[in-house]
Length: 215
Picture 1 (cartoon, one colour):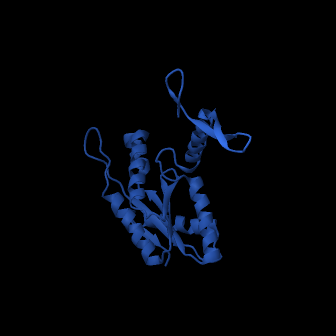
Picture 2 (tube, helix red, strand yellow; picture 1 turned 120 degrees about the horizontal axis):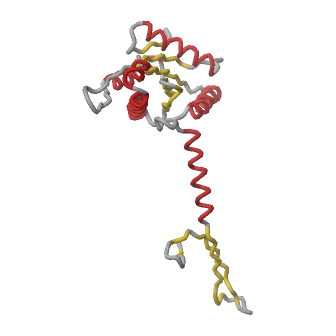
Picture 3 (cartoon, helix red, strand yellow; picture 1 turned 90 degrees about the vertical axis):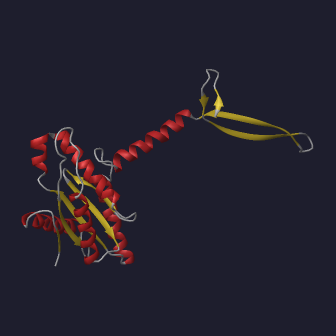
C-alpha cells in the first residue's frame, strides 16, 4: 500500500527487474508500481455475487440454488464411492398464522431465528439451507435411518425450545414438522425430494412437531 498524494493509501502490485552492468553484475533495480484498486474492487464484487447466489438473502444460510448443487454432488459421490446420505425436509408449523397475526416482519424474524437454530446444530460436513418460503432442507452425510431420525429430532427439539422475543408481550414459540428419507441406488433428486415431502406432510397430518421417516 503506497501513500497517495491526497493522503490515503493505495493498493499496488510491484514488479522488480534487476539492472546489470556490462559484466552482468546487478547494480540496481527498476520497480514498477501498478494501482490495483479496481482489481480489488472487482474481486469484492465477484465475492459478493457468489454470496448472493449461494446464500439466502433473508436467513443468511444456504440458498436453494446452492442446496440443489450440493444435492447433485451427494448423488455423484454415492454413485462413485457408495457414500450414503439422507435428507430432512423441514416445514414450520402454522407459519401462516404467525404472518396473519403478527405481520410479515415478525414472520421474517421467525424464519431467521429458526435458520440460526438449525445452522448452529448442524455438523460441519452436513448442510442446511432455506428451500423456499417456510421450508428448510438439510443434507446429512454418512448416515443410516436411526441416525437420520436422531438428527431430525434434535432439530425439532431445539426449534421447539427456541423463542422469538417480542417488543410487547410474551415471546413467540413455534415447532417444525420433518420428513426424512435416505438416498438409494437408482434414486433421482426428484424422487428423493418427493418422498421426503410426502413424509413431512405425514408429520403434519399426525399432529405436527414430529419427525417421520420411511419404514
